[in-house]
Image 1: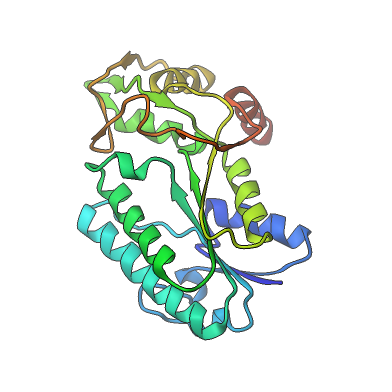
Image 2: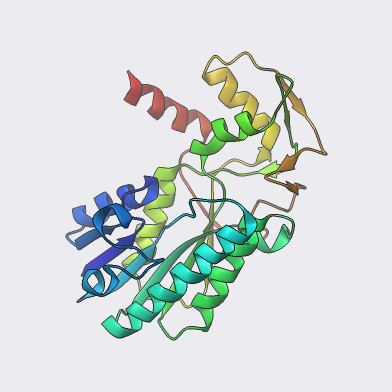
Length: 252
């Protein structure tokens, strides 16, 4: 099959492309740097010509609420229009677990708008909702600093390795469209603050972590239901220890 990955040069897109090529598929990794821009429509028609499946793993360059909403609405509308014209048979989109439970998070609300556009369109789809990536633990730590101390929520967290995310997205792309949402998560669930402590310990970072129930996650409060699957989810294979071991081996 010809499979086009929108956002194909990023972290997840690159990993998905590698897996799909190993399975024998014709893969096109598209992004503005390759001349395909979903915001302007530039290059979309030529990129999607003959495509069977489109995978959307794009990300907004801005997290400002109005800008991110505009990005996902414009990008998704242009992409779906081009898919209908090209006769694409399956649209796969990567989204986020729990976005309907954090109304104060502008990014999450924009992803909800993106999902709504996909669901009402006539292109068959599968939405893969993922928990946060283990690769983002360092960013969570840095964003939590208050006078040198990290104030991190102790709400439930179940991060997943990017390699596992790529595996699940690949699996969805080569399967029949489900016309529904599936959820994926890491194999471990514990307080977000515990994961950040594990990360700092593994990276020899001496900063102190305070488990703070009032700490916000990108502007939104976190409880034990906000960011984790509440029903059935597919679980990745890599827990924090295994993920960190692979990172250390790769860096050696």
